[in-house]
Image (tube, rainbow, N blue to C red; front, side, top):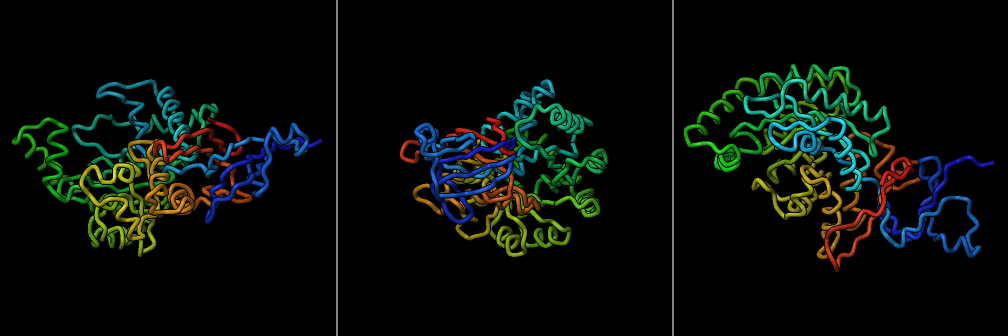
Amino acid sequence: MNNRSEQIFSNAQIVLADAVVTGSVQVVDGLIKDISESVFTAAARQRGMAKLSANIIDCHEDFLIPGLIELHTDHLETHYSPRPGVRWSVMAAIQAHDAQIAAAGITTVYDCLRLGRDEDDKFESGEMLALAAALAKAREQNRLRVEHRLHLRCEVSASDVLDDFSEFENNSDVGLVSLMDHAPGQRQFTSLEAYARYHKTKNKLSDEAFEDYMSVRINASRKYSTRHRKALANLCAMRKIPLASHDDATLAHVDESIEYGVSLAEFPTTLDAAKASHSAGLGVLMGAPNVVRGQSHSGNVAARTLIENQCLDVLSSDYVPASLLQAVFVLCSEPAILSVPEAVAIATRNPARTLGMQDRGEINTGLRADLVRVAHYPHQDSAPIVRGVWRDGQRVL
């Protein structure tokens, strides 16, 4: 008697690494067993045309793509603290975040936790560690639909960032660390005018108060950034944790990132920095909202410009989970600047390979059956529809 779990995803537009084929994908015990151009439907089986014992999932000519892989989202914080000063039930927040991630077609997510605070930070010491512990507990209790890993976003200009990092010293869930400096005059805010527009409005500061606010952060960056950047890079090298730069703007920034062993360049703010990072073998990551909107929300280089210059490798949903899948189909819809396989790869295979995950990110035999069924009607609307999500062959949405 055959006790294997077997499914056949049939009548699908299967997005492979280099082509889209109409056919079927056989899944056995959570792994992709076979890919063929044969089509088996439930109706055909009932007519005796296909004598199969497997569970047949008729995709009705929808796309079948690999599960999306999200490397940078801080959306968990939004569920945990939906309003300033408000803290939601940790487990309820995690489950809501997890459900939203699954509904976006994401099957592997690196949840961002911020380390290092300043005087107006909304989170207290220990809260990020508590979120990490709750995520681990949720996984143990089988509460989660998708696979969650940790991405530690380290503010190198903060005095306490190394103390915060030490709390995660033995946490095996940490899969990525990024080095950030959001001080005025640095990286994302090389333009002080852009920094003023963003923070002065956000924090409702008078001119005098804003000058004090800016001075404190500039001094903190000068005092701590270089020291902390080096220390964190050394710690990640010892623990073999992949390292990401953040908002590199100049060739000097890229050289520094290479020196520190960075493998992922997150959100380079200029075309020059993106080109240099890509040429050096770093994976270049940009935000999917940038693609959907057609521009950066902070006035930096557009993701499309990087694609046109062949120096964008990975997309991230950043602050809108659903934007990742939407951006994929924006890029391959008329007027298309990428083929469907190329567009899908920057949200699946490329992030997987950048962080050394060889078991997912592609529809290929022997890999995990992390699959998403997607309907897309470009003549009606640019927003794709997620019809179903499977992780390790198990339906989670």
